[in-house]
Amino acid sequence: MVKNKKNMVLKYVLGIVLLGLVLYFVDIGCIFRLFFGVSCPGCGLTRAYRALLKLDLKSAFYFHPLFWTIPIIIFLYYKKVSDKMLVPFIIIFIVVYLIRLFDGADDIVTIDITNGLIYKMLFGIINKIV
Image (cartoon, rainbow, N blue to C red; front, top):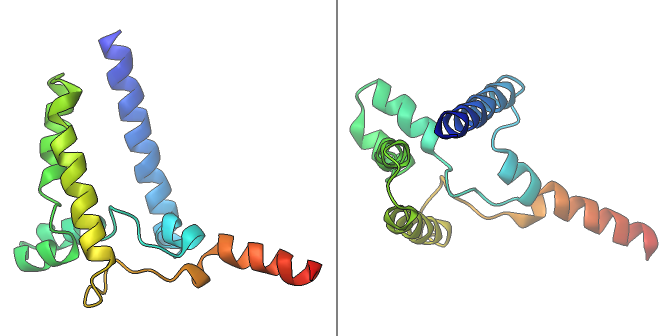
């Protein structure tokens, strides 16, 4: 049972990586931002890890200040710790996301709902009806 769960998680991770590569090569970018016009909580993580690979810690923290927590979360998950131990990480991610989202000086995490596909589709439909 545990092996099946690990295989399932591995398949999801590989699927997300594959989707990310496809989106990168077709230059769509973040699918969350594409649909909603709002940056996702993980916005900047890929750029943070790319900066880390270049040993540029300052840029890594600039792109996403919590990039270093992801390996810890994965480690805790595979060590089968209680889900309660992951709750602080989730709370920290949400708090940092909200701070970055509403910080006018942050140019990584942004809000532009009018640029999201859902907004455009809804208002396109409404404009055709009215």
